[in-house]
Image (cartoon, protein in one colour):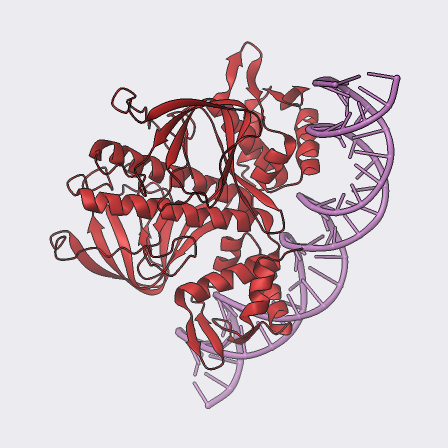
Length: 228
Length: 228
DNA sequence: CGTCTATTTGAGTTAGCTCAACCGTCGTGG
DNA sequence: CCACGACGGTTGAGCTAACTCAAATAGACG
């Protein structure tokens, strides 16, 4: 489970922000580093920690028996991963590159912080707002073309982690093509072709495979929710 | 937002059950009937009610600007719809056929029931378990073929609202083909053809368009999460 | 009986998939 | 230092699952 705690990621969750009060939780907080590809947790593991990303990016995913994979979300700084309604994690979570997290131990079989009503309410709102983000992901998976998916994805990352400079907006894509493919429900080839297509249509530059410069955010927005 | 409150819907949320203590909420509870196609709420509406389905089925959905639609979930008796993390609903919700609901007025801008910690915790767990259900829906939308989607869908409905008799499991499908199509990310034609295909492969009978009899649950299960 | 709507079925098209080749980068070992 | 293989990404060619468009069928209802 993935929860966005930053205010400026999704238009659907404006102004929502959540910072753990570290002093209050000093006894249960702990910083930790994960390296590229390392697992934070796996589906089915007993869940006794919630993680808040401090630096870097993680991916949460589910596997089908035959090896097909769906990436549920990319977790950026501020986001929470690992919330569960029972004692188990319900998806895998891995680091993409170097990732620094705060580890928050939860009491036995609950992520509700029974003893702290205020925090529980914060988590409730976060969970509800995460449901909201997931709903947009549904729309994308079920009802958008490859180009529309890619445009939506780039805009989301831009909104989340884009840096503005004189020539436009610059993004890092630390995840590999197969991560993007499994997030959007496409193949790596289609991801690659679609990026090339957006480049040829002068919406983006691709200085290298893991950097994107958005050169026309208007075109990209038109594509992401086209009217036809 | 949709929350499953019944224990036996998803294998991922075993044993989770939630019944509002009506006596405790007598002052804010109210029963209400909605007729086929009637709207419980629309995306963007101010959210001051949560609904628990008592009889019938509802659909929650989101619309793309161009009219494309994604159905997020079908709400069955026991389920909660209309939870929000802010003051607004983030999807549409309509009745399918005659629907009886309990209406639960929430205080101004919160579904957290600030004054009732126990209920707040229940809702938290429900929201988390709903996220869990949604994750399975992701896998289906992003990574399954039409036949696999249909098989998964039928099994889910069977688990939720199937009746067992001497010849197998019988389901009602009160929703129309276009609802199913928009839930699975397919077209109505593909839904229809896929049902016909499952019928010809002797997994189901179709006595009429809104009834299904599962004749081989094993075949259906194999198809839903095939190993190849 | 005619109209309307939902569903099914058929025929042809296409977006995205599969399979394969190719390219550039990087780390390793001779 | 270079050769080599591994890996991630891009591109091409052909295929196919699902889509679009169209027509046929079947109930429901006035």
